[in-house]
View 1 (cartoon, helix red, strand yellow):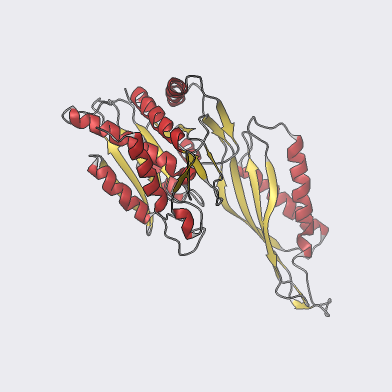
View 2 (cartoon, rainbow, N blue to C red):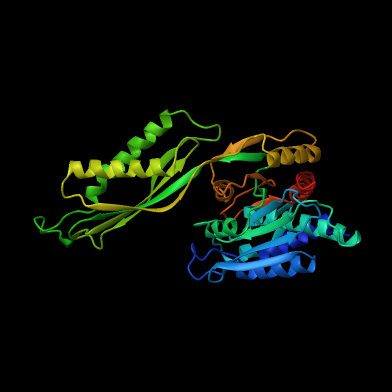
Length: 387
């Protein structure tokens, strides 16, 4: 027999208890290695063909394949990210209270990962009872990516190595099917001045103050974006994220660094956001010829919109309707996800996940019963798509 709902909860607790904090966010953190080794042992024991590799040292990806029995049948990947944001040690001790499981990564996104692994184990158990013949015509791939919380290099490496016909990402959606999401662009700006004693204004150039027109321009642009037509799921926006400069009160600052985030919706692009930043810098140079600054695109991800009649969307909507007893909401979301990497690679990737809240906070939780429903929905969608 395949794993029960109780086994699914035990697996989720095991996953939450494994610290997979992204070292790109917390230097020296654990990373995904221990979690991948756990998954590799478990999925190998279930009879899947497991592939583990490292896009970067000690930052592995994993793909496990349950081969189908039909030539040319479509393959489907259930893909999850493995990393979590930083947390104190006590948040890696899962706690179940009033039907909710609390802990770091419980809904972002180890609940979806646990559901995907459980689907694979159930189908693999069915194959064993049939003498090794998979109940699916097409291949089922269970994937885990490194680094979604920062640069998503794990997803980029995954789509270079594997190219299924479609994918489902079971991150929290509160039982909605997400087929669109926004993109973003992060910029690092550096204004250069001349450091000198504060009492020597003829020598100093204030790198912080010279960024003033850029900061004012960011506020003006955001007001302009707010007045433009919005997507169903939100509007385009821009804001200053971080700023640092200067070394002491009695001195002109020689350097000021500014971080900027531009959130993108359908119809906007990373290239457009780069042009906007260039325009802001040009305006600051026109305002004061002493202004000297450079900008660098840190990470840029394009917005994504799938066809609502794409086969993977139809399979997922039908499966969710069977489990929910109603048609699920099909919508977009302003938040970016690794599904964008898949879409850019020509692999349609829809999202469907459990009920939860508090991601990236000490109160992160996921509804336990909802995780079991997600597992059943994913299994229905897999059986339909890979038939």
